[in-house]
Every structure is written in C-alpha cells, then in structure tokens.
Length: 319
Length: 287
Image (cartoon, rainbow over all chains, first blue to last red; front, side, top):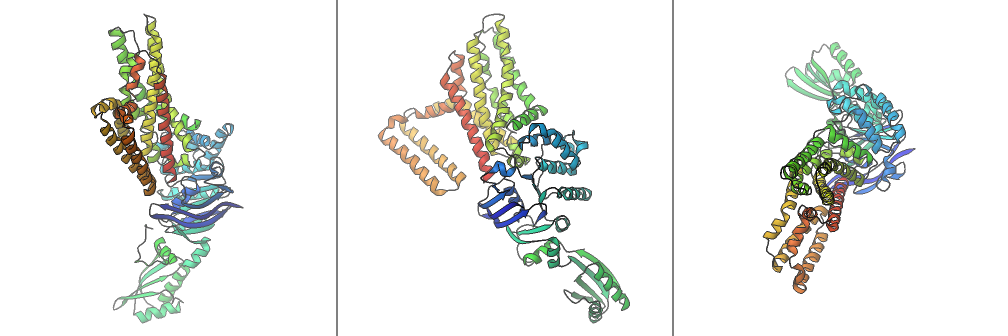
C-alpha cells in the first residue's frame, strides 16, 4: 500500500529553490532514507510532508488525504521528529507526552496507557518524572522519537535522528529505529552514508533540491564501488610495483606516484579481501610495504562521484 | 486548544513568570488600596484600578513575551504545527491562558472593596464596572503583547517592542494634542500613514502591483476627501490618537459611568489583535 505520495513538489524561498519538482512514493513497512548534504532540501521536504510548511507547488497525499487540503485527516497518519527535537525543557517526559497526546486528539481514556506503552518502548520510563531539561541528549532524542509515536501514526518522519549524539547513543537510537521499522513506515534523513545503508531498505539521494537517485543501498553501493580506498607506500620501482599489483589482479582505478627513487605511493579502491591479496603479492615479490592503510571513502567523494560534480565545482552546502 | 491552555497555565506557574505577574499586580493594588482607601479614607475603590493602570506597561510585556517567541526559538512551534491544531487554536489557547492569569489577581483584588464595605459605604457599582473595564483593558494589551511575541524569536525583543507599543497607547492622547489640528495637517498625517501602510503591505506580500493599487486608492481617496469634503478631516488626527489611547478610556468608568461603547471597543480591539496574531502565525507557517 502507498502511504505517502509526493507529486511535483516544489518549494521556493524568495529566489532560492529549496525543493525542485520532486516526485516519489513511500510504501508500507519499509524504512526509507533521504541522503544528501546540508542544504539539499531534506528538511524542507520533511517539513512539508509533516504539514509544518506550505509548498510552492505540487501535491502531497498521505493515506490519500491531501496534506494542504485535509490537514487534520492527513496529520493523523504522520509522526514527525524535526532536526532539533521540539521539547519543552520545563516539562517531564510523561507530562510532555500526555500534552502531545492531547494536541494530537488521542481519546482521553487512552492517553495515559498509550504514553506509558510508548515510554517503555522508547526506553524513557526510568526518567519519566525528571525534567526534560535535565536529561542527556540521548534521552532527549528518545523523548523526541516518543512524541512522534503518539497517536500510533503509520508513517514516522525522522529528520537527522542521530545528529549530535555520542557513538553509544547513536547505536542505541539506530537500534530503536530498527525496532520501530517493524510496525511503522519510516522516512529518515541523514548525511551519513553508513547510517542510511545500515538502516534503510531504500535510499533517495537529494542534491540541490532534486531527487537524483533512488534505489536499495546495495545497488547504490555497487554503483559507487566498495567505498574503501587503500593507501600504500612501497619500496621498489614503479614498474615492479605495477607488475605486482597486476599479478594481484588490480589494474583499474589505480593511482601510482613516485615519491623518491625507491619509494612509490599507491592509491586504489579495495575491500578487505583485495587488501589481503595485495599484501601477500608484495610479500612474495619481496617488496617492502612501508605503509598500508584503508580509508573509508567520504560521503563527499561518493556523492560527488554520484552526482557527477567535479571536486572543483562549487557546491552549496557541506557534506 | 484545551491542551495548549493547560500546558501554558502549568508552564506559567512552574516558572517564575506567573508568580511575578501576580505579585506585581497585587502589590500595586495593595499599595493603592492602603494609600487611597485606608490612609486617605476615599470610599471610592474605582480610584485604585484607575491609578494602577500604569502597572500594565511592565506586567503585560512580562506576561506575553515568552508566549509565541519562545516556541519559535526552541523550535517547539514545529510540534504544534505538525499536530492537529490550527493556528487559531494555538493562538486562542495561549491568549486565554494569559487572560486567566490576568484575571486571577483582579479577582483577588475584588475582595478588597467587599471587605471595605463592611466598614462603611463603598460604591460597589462603580467599583466593579471599573474593575471590569480594567480587566478588558488588560485583555486588549495582552492581545497586543501576544501579537508582538508572534513577530519575534527573542522574548526580550518582543517584550521591548510590546513595552514601546503600550507606552505609545499610554501617551497617545498627549501626543495627539501636540499635533496641529488644521485640516491640511490631517491630510499630510494620513498621507504619511497611508504610505507606511502600503510599505508594510509591500514587505508582507512582496507584490508591487498590489502595493501600487493600494497606494493609489488610499492617496486618491484622501485627496478627494481633502478637496471636496475637508470637514471630515477636521479634528481627525486627535480622534485617531484618541482611539489608540486605550488607557485614557478607563477614566469614564471611575467617574461612575458604565460606558458600553468603551467596553465594546475593548472587546473589538482585543479580538482584532488576536486575529492579527493568528495571521502572523499563519503567515510564518506557510511562507
């Protein structure tokens, strides 16, 4: 079933085109990811889907209800966590969630039960009666996610849900999102490639307000290569090094540079298996490896590669 | 709407602001009651609210400054916008909570004349009609404060602008009397006002055509009035300032007149500014 349908969505701020004629649909039971740099239009699109912002043009249907024409009906099916969790710091999580239930028109008799269920699910029961202002960022994010779950909406929109959290909190929140994905359709945004590929069933890449790609993370990954880059410094002549690499089957996307008479720098794309093969090949040829390190391709490199922008091109927004 | 109202009420009294507001109004009323009624022995309690009206200049901006500005600063407005609430429900919920807090100290103060009447004759009719007008005056000023709170993200900026606006209302009669009463002066005054209104229209709609048409209609109309029925402009500047001078209108009540026109003016002004506030929220939400 199609939960959300976006048709030719455009949003213009004065002279700046934030979202440029985007169309896509979201189906039940999947986790979708918006991937793109800051300023790509992720938050604007999400704000429009959640009914917080008007579009300049286009249509958004949520469960077949137009978000601009039938706001109340459409919003019933959407839970939204903006980039900065909208929390009242002088309230306790419990009071806050009861308040959200009230403004989301959850029937009075159901409110307390719903809130305690959601608090259990998001792991905030133990801090239910502490002020939100005194909670850690991780807990605040959980309260933010909890408020998006109030009213049991089918679609949950999470704008950069892990930004600003420490690594342990990021893992916890990702696990929570994975759990929620079992009962809800989720649309999340991120500028972290690994996060999107780890969590999402489908990824949509946004660039300068346009939807430039949509596919499963595996397929996008295949298109983009492994994403790992191997840097080496080897003692030997360029011809010797090239011969060894060829014997290991590495000829494509190879970058060799002579540093001095007997030292060559090598740069190529490689995963762990290739790395091992190269290591043994050099050992067999008795060429000394001075340095060998792998670096994950940054999103910037992958993104630039994908969107076909050169490194020298000006790009609106950092990655 | 009830949800917003309850949340606001709790937030006012969980923090300092509700208590500070209550204390300010009660203190001012207490001082004037003891000075005018107890020390000087005036039997007319309506003098107390009449003299205490200046307290609104400080108390109302304090009451309304956080209301919408803080929601925007903390980004909690997105929570409200993504809920089932309309902009009108959000604004009215907040406005009613402010008005309730305004009513609390006034209800308490209404006990004073009742206590005093046990010790002598107090004109209760005048007293309570003045208290009612005082409350409605507070409602108007609260609506003005709320409107400025909707325009800013910084609560202190919103408080400062509200204070200036209230101060202008407070001295509007005096300011009006300083201006020339001639018909030509009135024409120039309203021309400038029309240009300012059109400039505002241009800023808000970003539409030159609409602004141009509005300017033509306003200035053309004014010119026609000036040329053919100039008597309409006679004393109109003072009247314009008089209509802004909401504080001064309280005087008729303490003179013992239940002025229904003024009460209606207060109610309409309060409604007008609540409406403006809803429009300001709506504009921000959809632009």
